[in-house]
Amino acid sequence: MIDTTRKSAASSKSAGYSPSSTDLPLAWLNYCDHPESPETKNILAIHLDSILKERLPDNRYEGILSGREEEVRQEACLLVVSKYLAGNPELIAATASVNHQEIDAQIRRSVGAAIKSASQTLKHAIKRHRQLHSYGEDLDALPQAVCTHPACRTSLWELPYEAQRQMVFAALRSALKKKLLHARNARILMDMIKEGLSQSEIAKRLGISRAAVHQRLEPVRKIVKKHIDSQEFLGS
Image 1 (cartoon, one colour):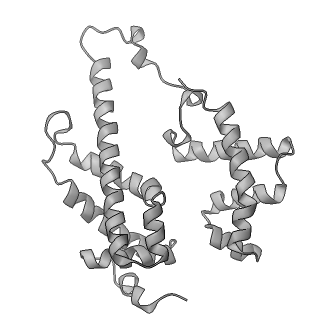
Image 2 (cartoon, rainbow, N blue to C red):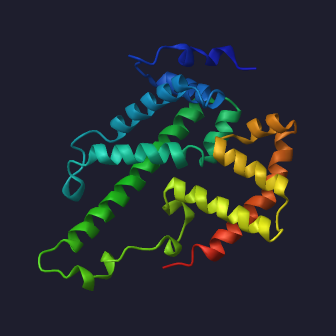
Image 3 (cartoon, rainbow, N blue to C red):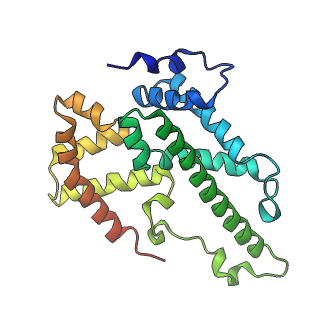
């Protein structure tokens, strides 16, 4: 049952919605309750955009990143949504205990980490670009000009999401062919990825507990990771 105190943000019209710091935990909790709702997604996005602009206003950078604030904010927003929020154990714990103060603090912490990561990535990319386009340089003679094959990546997360998705599916198919996995357990992970389902949602569909889903997925995760580490990421 959803706490009625958490409905106010989701029931508001997102058009013209003006975020405040006290609404941020509510926006996050409502999004967690209704992750597929366009309304809760939009309201959370408005909050994240507000925090990004607060933490990284225009004209903040000097030097190589001067004038690139919006570019960094856009990349940081993608990182926050795709990686930093879901990968923040303190935020997960605060969400489970409905600790509004800690939720607010951890979301802001995640945004700060995403900005730092995005700015460093962009800075390195600009430096590489300038090196490759220096006057008089022979691009064929520069090792930086060589495009790295996906197999030489050091981490799955360095690849685009669609590439990650296809590699996981390939790992599952390989494991099934070698009879390293039970088809039923592999299907659970495939369905979760294809349909964007959480463990709770897949548990409800299958009529089993969330703990049972976690137990079935544990060997699947290990085999997929081993397959990818050994066959896809050999290091540069």
